[in-house]
Length: 240
Ligand SMILES: [Zn+2]
Image 1 (cartoon, helix red, strand yellow):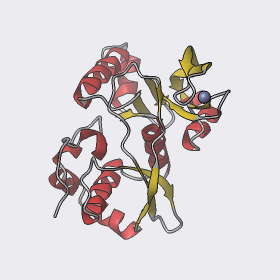
Image 2 (cartoon, rainbow, N blue to C red; image 1 turned 180 degrees about the vertical axis):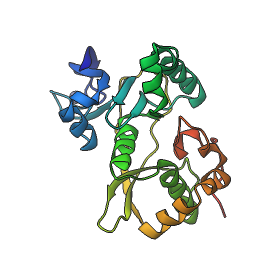
Image 3 (cartoon, protein in one colour; image 1 turned 45 degrees about the horizontal axis):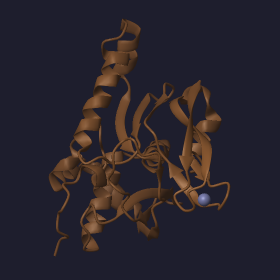
């Protein structure tokens, strides 16, 4: 089951108040329709009833899929220091699994754990695991291809938007979301800047030597937060 929380919010465009229900926790194993909404990008997206302005709505939630042994902690938006959120979620995980009853501990041992910021990031993780892709290699690919375009990892946010026939990866390039505290509930949607396609061969090359990801981008080494944009040092200058 999942639990919802009720919120009163104000439209960012016209200030009209309206009410929304947010997902508090998602045990996706029994909720295929919620999972489908996440993968298809319908989840946590609300239009203002007065002016129609579309908002991405974010809150702290935990996504668990016991069938696929996936545990994804979702923070609303990227805070000034992602490590604080990581410490919080490691503690929550330990309380639920590691220091829980033996059956929980065993369950926790097999879980793939991640921390993501925002529902687009959650969607990306679920999608790429569905496609049996290694997320560290995918993040490495973003960095390599951004460098080739003269971009630093924090200039744009790239999210996997589709796995094309032949296994080629298509990324959506969007404007970076604001860095704010966890109290924010309504945020302006990122603007789509374009798409970028990476060939399957490039992915295979990365997969043959996963350690390269950490060599090229040392901040990709974390075992909870595998996200080039979130963990890259801010203020890096673009290459060349
Ligand atoms: Zn409005």
